[in-house]
Image (cartoon, rainbow, N blue to C red; front, side):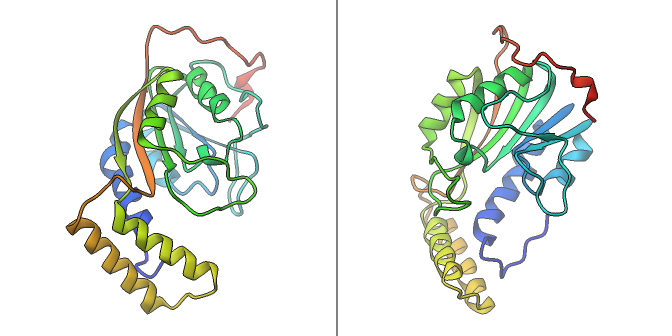
Length: 230
């Protein structure tokens, strides 16, 4: 995935894309559910590693087609333990009841299946008013454990200087300042400082791959016919 160095999201996406390619991609397998797929930015990355892609969201983004339209607080029309991989990137903060969402992830994932999850610790309001939550590293681990997932390493998406640079750029763009030279300079300086002076107690996002624990019974919430889905 190529990134433009004059993009105001270059800082966060450079860390996120590197983690997806180097850490998460190798864990993907079988049927993948992109749960909150948005514009499906990572479909092309994961499709060579899986047997089937299912995109689910409350509405289709421009230029995309979804397989399942999500109804808030309603189970997806898929059988329990029917997917091998769930991809959830910057979705959890937009779900009013994230416990229901994670319970659905637990229901849908086969034992030993994986949940590839990224969620913000610090980010300005976005997609308002549907922006509800922020998470700490320990909150992510606790939420996943409560819903039958064992989180491996929970990695920070950059540290203090990545956070400062991204906050500054988001502020500039929000106020109509989009000078490419300025954006490129902030990107370059922030990333250099972030790698020189590592402090990941403050970060933009948390990124982790969690495994669905075996030996847990999950109550089926869907009684329809999932064979109708593509």
